[in-house]
Amino acid sequence: MFDIKENLKNLPDKPGVYLHKDAYGEILYVGKAASLRSRVRQYFQSSRGMDAKVRAMVSHISEFEYITTDTEMEALILENNLIKKHLPRYNVLLRDDKTYPYIKLTLADAFPRLIKTRVVTGDGGRYFGPYADVKSANQIIDLLNDVYRLKRCAADRFPAGHRPCLHRDLGRCRGICEGNADREAYMVSVAGAAAFLNGRSRELTELLRERMEAAAAKLDYETAALCRDYLQAAHSVIEKQRVVLLSGGDIDIILSAKGEKDAHVVVFFVREGRLSGKESHHLQSMREDPPAEVVSAFLKQYYINRSNIPREILIDAPLPDGALIGEWLSALRGAAVHLHTPLKGEKKALLDMAKRDLANTALLLDEKAKTRREKDAALSAAFRAFLGIAADGCAAAARNAEDAEDARAWRIEAYDISNTGGVDSVGAMAVFYGTRSSAKDYRRFRIKTVEGADDYSSIQETLYRRLRRWQDGDAGFSPLPDLILVDGGLGHVNAALQILRAMKLDIPTVGMVKDDKHRTRGLVFCGEEFDLKGNPLLYHFTGKVQEEVHRFAIEYHRGMRGKSMLRSELDGVPGIGPKRRNALLTQFGGMERIKAASEDELARAPGMTRTAARMLWAHFSGQRGENAGAAPKRQDAER
Image 1 (cartoon, rainbow, N blue to C red):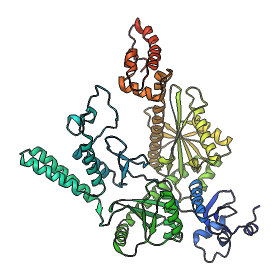
Image 2 (image 1 turned 45 degrees about the vertical axis):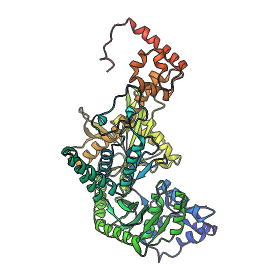
Image 3 (image 1 turned 60 degrees about the vertical axis):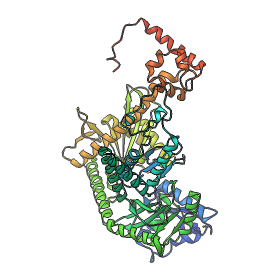
Image 4 (image 1 turned 90 degrees about the vertical axis):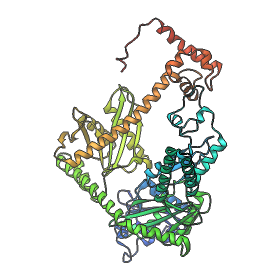
């Protein structure tokens, strides 16, 4: 048995990370310390000065572990990694995984274009945003494309005989695909679009006003009206972005708001001196957590995987470990990051404005969080009632239902199998926390050990691989679900339960069955099927889950099937790799034309050599000979 008092004596006076565990070995809390000896001992002294959260945690601690580091900075990084991996119950946890869109200017292209993206990479492009309002981002892209006639298609090369798209026919594009565009003039337009995205709207509005007046002078009222509409659209976009009179630069403002049960953190984005948007995050936290701790935890988890860290971050009050976090953020960014609380000047005015905005929206955030909790609690209660009613002879499921925490949204995992005649079988796992799907936790599996259309064995392989990854400590497969839903009936449930029993896990497992019209009919549990018509909450949720996991499985299977079809046609030919395959399909427009092409025609395709063309022509020549005297075949059987 772990002797806490004895092990406290052996704690080193060094920086590091400590992990508190309960009697079952579950990690309760991960923390960092400049001195492990001083920090960890504090938990086991008098509880008189402790808040309720810490007292509750200490009452469950049965053992602790620690990892020493050379510096407190290393401890900070390690603490963050361990929190993300183990998701301890008593740590402040960032639950949202929102990714707001950016507008990207593809400067690496010969003729840059504007696209919307949610992934920021170091690919040479220039990113503007993020935009909390997706419609606003789309409106900005459409406006700039129309006014500056920017390139809209993604193609870089255009083969001979390429037919221009509809945008060219309507005069919305400069005809780059025809080779007539002046790149120097085009880059002037790109600079104008970039200026607008940077907050300098005067150039665009003056350009539109000049065009409108010139068209009106020529009595070209149709063009003048179009410019007038563009001008109104530009003003509409500008009004959606609040202007702050700063000298420029990128700034994030981080503010916390305490909710009824949890905490909210709001990030305000200032880009090029313009407050361009904000986003809110709900955190799993306790009311006793001070705002400084919430903000500190948020900073460490929010910026760890972001490449666009600004040079300045404004906070409402200094943090105890603010200097250390600032140093860590600077290392991530590769340049200095200033984390501070302004006391006067423009930045203080900016911070005050954000605080006033937060005061106006705090009640709304709390109300949304409350509504979400109520829905999640109602769903968990409905499942607990269902499992309890149906679990008379199912002790493990009943026990799990009783042990579930009322305040915590259940993690529900749904599984489905997709294949075509037993070919290219795939498994899909969709994850829900209460009523909300968690796309970042979705996983997909290519079935490796099952031949043919065997859904039962495929479910077993999928579930085994998921649980094995958890046993191996893979953070991407943690934590375990509170409930497993499989798309199917009693046979699918029994197949899943065999894996759970073999791995000595007790997780309620329920089947989702459909009627003849492929609509949700009921749930299968403990050998019985239960009609859901009298339980609208479970009925609608089960239908939602069935559709979502089926959609996810079908999308993955279609991708696998498409790749398989391409492989069967071209990838078996010596000398034809993915690049040549794509070039051939682009050049000829399809497999039938490739098969009918001569050796000389194949050799003229981009990237092809005479040797590769000869081998490809010889590969299909046998098929041409076989089909020469054959009668036309009906395609009905294939369909």
